[in-house]
Image (cartoon, rainbow, N blue to C red; front, side, top):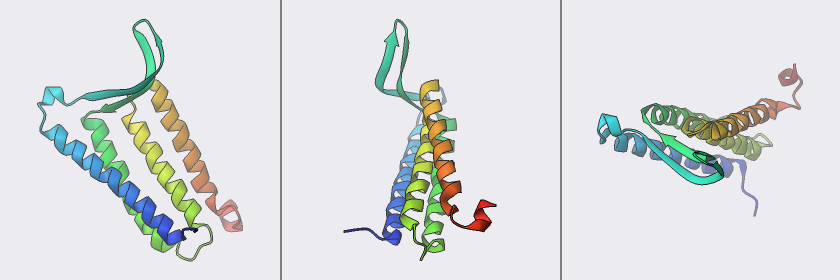
Length: 145
């Protein structure tokens, strides 16, 4: 069973809305903390470790990253939800919604990165998803020009 473009849009919209709810939850939890303790870091796995230096997937949650998480997921949800109606009847709606969800995920990875390695991975994914979104209308002469 193949999902329709509208269903793909609703799935993408729900996923981004869940990320917005998680961002609001992180914001509320940080507000309850003492201002000195509003900094959380979590290493999901370590890729390379040598002495005191280690590289891995480290997520950082502090007031600046939570603010950016709220902006990215909030505006991302508005864009994905608007695109459901705007792209109605287009042939490749599913692909567009997948690209848009990848873009929002990449931006969230970028703003939550706790080290340079993850920041570069998020930045690369933002570049890739931006390229895919820009190139979405590649068959239209007016978009190519």
